[in-house]
Length: 216
Ligand code: DX5
Ligand code: ZN
Image (cartoon, rainbow, N blue to C red; front, side, top):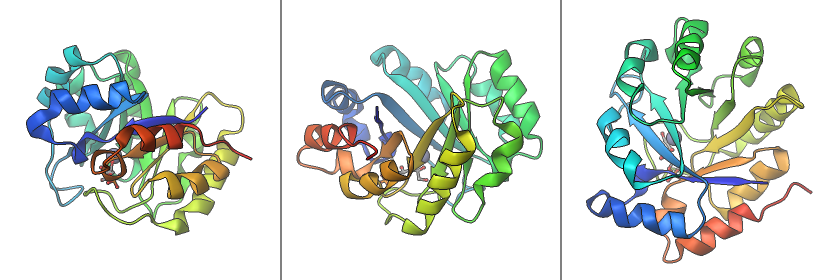
């Protein structure tokens, strides 16, 4: 089963309620929130209030991707935001176990993300404690970038590492039905897509095409 997580970074924020309804109607599984601090990535996006204010508007799983330096200091701002899962970056957290512990304490699922230049093997020590691995298939910071197919082998290695553990394997960046196909073949089962969905004349079709992908 492949899950699709539309990234709101690419949505028409002036009509955010209508955009959420659109992807819900199309059968989206998660909503992906890209939080950026202008330090860890050279861009600014949304804060915890964006998540908090959208919570009452949707029952979808809120998948919050925080691209921030030292995530520990920001976590408290998200505890009551309605985030179902927070995925932070391996490269940004001096004390990974502390971030994991804090999230669990507040009943928020835990994801760790690696940038393209970081090998996924660094996550081995944490596999017993996390719910999600997020493989970036672009340099984080902006939507609308091209998919980096040199990340495909990393997806396969992550799949091997996870084996039968209850951990989702999420990919993010330049994902569309074509690039998603290769990712699913390597073992990805959650697909984040921003521009492919929100810039499409037919988001419904895009979401359905990606959900119907199967590992052969
Ligand atoms: C990039 C974000 C991605 C991005 C995806 O730093 O983490 O979630 O919004 O956008 P597309 O699908 O347009 O590459
Ligand atoms: Zn993201």
